[in-house]
Length: 417
Image (cartoon, rainbow, N blue to C red):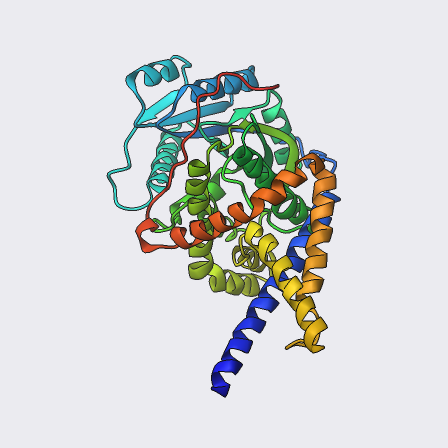
C-alpha cells in the first residue's frame, strides 16, 4: 500500500512540476513578446529577386478564394517577378472557371484518394512542378510564399515582405488578422492566434531563435522550402509543425513582421473549431512524440538552441487547459496548507505558477486591449478547455495519422482594408 501512495505522490509531483515549468515558459514568452518591436530593416546588399512564387493550395475553394485572388492581384501590380501558382483540388466547374479567368498558372489535381496526408501530397506535387520548370528554364525561383485559400493579403504585402528578405532574413512571417470576430468561437480563435504571435513569433524573433510559422502568410528561400517539403512525414496529421522540423535542419534567420498583414476568416462554429483544434493538437503531440528528442539531439549536435526550444514548445499543454487547471490546483494547495499546515513538496508551486499566469494574462490583455471580452472569456474557458482536451485526445488517435482534417469556412465577400 505504501508503494501505491508513493507512486500517486510521485505522479502528482510530476504534473505539478510540468505545469509550473510551462506557466513560467508561457509568462516569459508573453512578457518578452509584448516588448517586441520590428527591427530596422536595412538592406544587406543591393539584392534583386528572381521569381517569387506564391503557392495557393486550394482544396474545395469557394467564393472567398476569388476575393483572395482579387486582393493578391492588387498586391502584385507592377511586380512581374511575383508568380502565383494555384493548385486546385476538387473545385466546382463554376469556381474553376472564375479562378482561371485571373490568368495565373492553375493546376487541377486530386490527392484525397492517395494514402497519407493529402496536404503533404499537394505540397510535394507543386514543389516538384516548380523544380521541373526551373530545370527547363521557364522559372527561376528564389523565394516561395505560402497562402491559404482564405488569405487576403494587404496591398503592401509584397513590399514589406521584400524589405525583410533584403535585410538578410531567410524566413519572414506575417501577421494573420481576422476578417470578423462575430461569434464566440471566432473571438477565441483570434485570441489564440494573437497569443501565438506574441509567444512563438515575436518573443522568438527578439531572442534570436527560429520563430514558429503559422501555416501561411510567410515567405522563405526556395531551396530551404524545397528540401523541407521533401522531408514531410506523410503520417503526420497536419502540416505546419511537421514542416517546422524540416526548416529547423537549417540555421536560418527568421523575422516576425507584424506589419506584413494577411486577412483571414476565423472559424465561426463550435464544430469547426473542434475539427481545427483536433488537427492542430493532433499534429503537435504526434510531432512531439516522434521528433521531440531528435530535435534536442539536433540542437546539441549543431550547437543551436532553436531545435531544443521547439521541442520544449511542442510538449506544452493546451493553454486553455493550463489556465483552467492551475487555478484549481493552486486553490487545493492553499486549502491543504491552511488545513494541515504543509504541502507534499517544499514550495507552493501551483500558487507561484498561478501568479505567473496572472502576470502573463494581464500583460497580454493590456497589449491586445481585450479587457472588454474578459468576462466572456472566463465564462467560456471551462468549455473551451474541455473541448481542447477532447481534441488533443482525439487528434492523437491512430485513425488521424496520415490525414488532414479540413476546416469548413463561410463565404465572405468583402474585408476591411
